[in-house]
Length: 140
Image 1 (cartoon, one colour):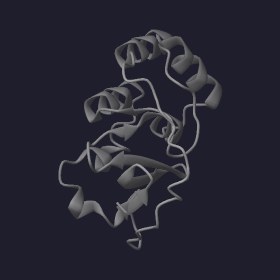
Image 2 (cartoon, one colour):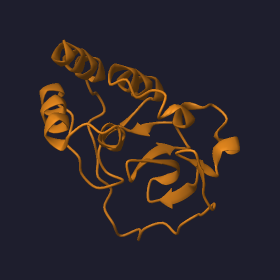
Image 3 (tube, one colour):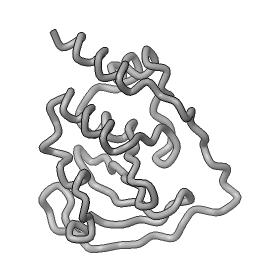
Image 4 (spheres, helix red, strand yellow):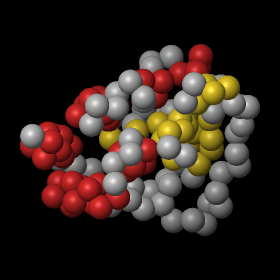
């Protein structure tokens, strides 16, 4: 899994469906907007589910909502894509720096964006459990 330096710090990246899903190194949180989109869920369905749960819709690749790894895992299980994103949930990511979607990639660290870029702030309290229940009820 390649690493990248962003204005919020170092992140691990995993790619699925040509979308990079990021996990922050400092706290292990996962970018949920990217994760759901990379899982192949349509943008309209994502917006509907997220708006019902009060979660911001997809924004920039670094803005948006970052959730604890357990919540990200729960969402993957709900949408039956946990196996696809399994490398993202490993506790020892050091061994996975070069593996993305089963393909060997070159390791690359990019320069951070300009410090003048204002960080996108997201709500601290997010009803991810509500998101999961909503998705499960829509499947049946």
